[in-house]
Amino acid sequence: MGEGISDYTKFTVDLRRHMWKASVEMDLRRLIWQIAVMGKYISAKIHESHRKLAGFKNIYGEEQLTLDRSADEILKNQLEYSGFVREYASEERDAVIQIGKGDEKYFITADPLDGSSLVDTNLSIGTIIGIHKESILAEGKKTLAAAVYITYGPLITMVYSAGKGTHEFVLNREGEYVLSEENITLKERGDIYSLGGLRKEWTPAHLKYIEFLEKEGYKLRYSGGFVPDINQVLIKRGGIFTYPALKKSPNGKLRLLFELQPMAFIIEQAGGMATNGKQDILSIKVTELNQRCPIYIGSRFEVEKANEFLANG
Ligand code: AFP
Image 1 (cartoon, rainbow, N blue to C red):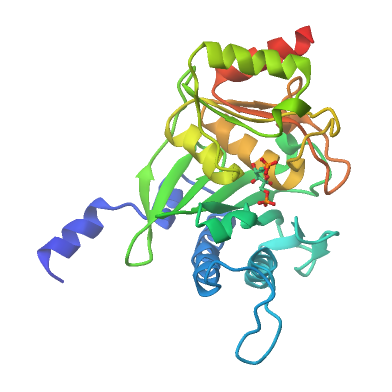
Image 2: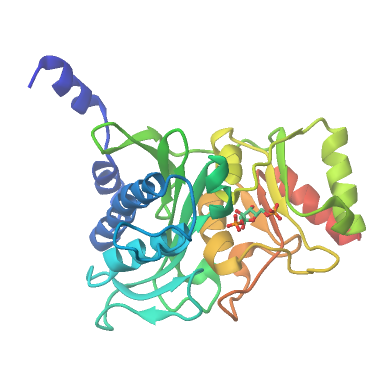
């Protein structure tokens, strides 16, 4: 191998080496690695679909699945018989399924392709995974062992935390996930905000909070994709993403189990906060699979401010 290449590998830390150095438990390392590898298959599916959703027939005349269902199939098939996963719950399925023999260590929650409605606009979308040590119908704080999200954008990046900090990897041309940002730490406050829901649907308390941020000069950053929007808060080291309680939907839109718990785990590991405006996301008990929850997630100052405005009503 030429000197250049060996230098290159010498200075790059790939995902498996990083997790080994961080003493992440072996089965968890292997599971996180498998999930990262699936990101490549899901990305290939996105490109193969020419940015369109269902309704396409493949060369055999078979109806093609929508991208999020294809992504769900890829995740389930890869995790099945992996030896690490006992149960699999997905936003694409209406029940938890047992995919192991019944004695495996981990329970997976998946939003296989969040923001799939953006695929035809060529905006970034993502996969969100929660890795739980026990049954998922409980408080996230007690059951989550790790969380992963993958962003399919100009680059494919993967962010994970196994409870020892939050770290980002970029998929390189050789198909390896190489460390790009280690121990990401949010500042006390940032200067960007992402706002979900229609303004006319917001509660008065939420509106007052947003007007506060606008008066403080926060810059609006909203793509309609939770993964790229929260990823921007993380990588820019601060700011807030919120999808609030709405007048007609008091629990907001995003799902506690599949979207919010994994992101709350990752953001808290980066020194940030995640609440529903009153209570930490990770201390909210999950009582049903598709439970929705308002979300305020990002750096400490903005989330604490949100809690304050909502407490004052
Ligand atoms: P889709 O998965 O249907 O595209 O929804 C994406 C999403 O769940 C989340 O990723 C966004 O933050 C949120 O919806 C955007 O919702 P609005 O379209 O109401 O702004």
